[in-house]
Image 1: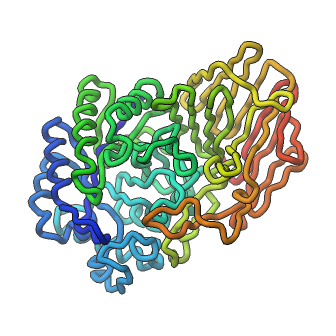
Image 2: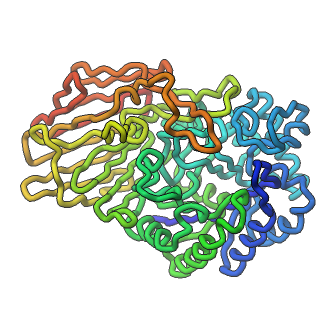
Image 3: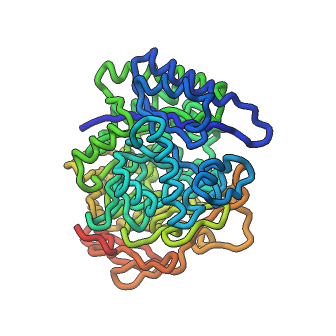
Amino acid sequence: MKNIINIINFIRAVEPRPGRNIDMQLPMREQIRLLRENNLRGTFLLQYDTLTDPSFDELIDDAATFCEIGLWLEIVQPQVEAAGLEWKGRYPWDWYNDVGFLIGYEPDQRFKLIDVAMERFKERFGKYPDSVGSWHIDAVSLKYLDEKYHISASCNCRDQVGTDGYTMQGGYYNQAYYPSVNNMFCPASTKENQINIPVFRMLGSDPVLAYDYQVFGYGYPYCPTLEPAQLARFSDWTDWFMDTLFTHSHGLCFQYTQAGQENSFGWAKMKAGLEYQLPFIAKMANEEKVCVMTLGESGRWFKENFDMTPPATVVSMGAWKRPDLRSIWYCSRAYRINLIMDNGVVRLRDMYLFDELYREHYINKRCDTHACEFRNLPVMDGAIYSNPSKRITAGIYFTENGQNIIWDDMIYEEISNNVAKIKLISDKRTLVVLLNETFIEISADFEDLALVPVYDTENVFGKKNEEDKFANKNNSKTSLSYIEKAEAQKRDVTFKMNGFDYGIKVTQGILGKDFTVKSENKKIKLITFNNHKY
């Protein structure tokens, strides 16, 4: 069992957004200072424009004496022009997906853009980078980075819907995974379809609040992540998050989070958070509670220990300032699921299936919209399918005789490196949920257990001309796929999204036409049926 923290700061040379006047070098200078003062090694991921800007040379040389230097692979004007392509962005760095990311270019153009960045890096450092990150890197580009440059690790954005135009919903919630050659956001289920680069999830998502924060808010003006410019600016949240992740949650095979901040926020916004976080992390490292590694080191460790993606959990028995909320995430190569307990009511808040044959949108063509989408296959999405204005909190609820069961306690246990056990207890009843790599088994000591789905139908199947509830100031539009079909017949719940068929088989239990599943001999067993081969 290993607890890993990556301190990753990624550095851009310019911040051209109107109304911003940010010293782009000051955050890097202070980050280097804090790392050195706390005897910590971090990873600096440099955007192409930073590599070609002489004003950053002294800082880069200083960081390289004790930190890992890698590549931040957003696309900028000088990189595009060096590759002999036309820049169509609004600014020299533009966060729109059709110009500022690899997916905005045809696959053969992506290779040219990668080569230009890699050669500039090698010219500067005498070797290719060991780690390459970005908010998202498509499967075609990751495969190219693996086969030509043999990088050790990559990193991408946490789950979110629409923020800045980037929808990444339904992936491995934390830790790391080997992506499919067809979808960088999906863990491969077979070695033949696996890209051998571990991809680590960034930004340290709060396991309780971050998932549906965009819908419910929870009364906080900052995103619930470890970013020092966000909720981690508060030291007591950082204390709670680190304790939750590394003291009370083992993660099955390993536990992980990423600290650090992009320089585009400016030093003033990240100062308090970083000045608290880094001494805190150093103290945990000195006490051998965590291992601080560079991104490249983490990738090599992952490859040495796992030849395929291992199951992972993130467990929180109480939220920050909300002890009534409890949350358990489980991810395997077949699916991810989240159970949440809110004032005694437990529901499956989220369930996505992973199928390595489900293709991302950008395999054979460029993204021609400002917004993008990387998704997997939804069974339940408690963020997208909820509708607070209709008082609909989406999920699959545990009921008895048509009423939500009120539980007194939720207990988490790890049975092995791939099986998690969740026990729900009340005065009169007990229920056990076993989460295995390919199936979910629910056992109760009472007869009338049922799983009842609750959702806003329009949010499942889509509604045209609706104001984008996931829009923010940097995003006028969200790219979002909806379910095309959902049916319940005999023992099969089947779905279709983007023309792709998938589903769940109820091998024990009674399936109703309304998707309700009633227990059979006090048990319910669900198995994903798709193209996985274990």
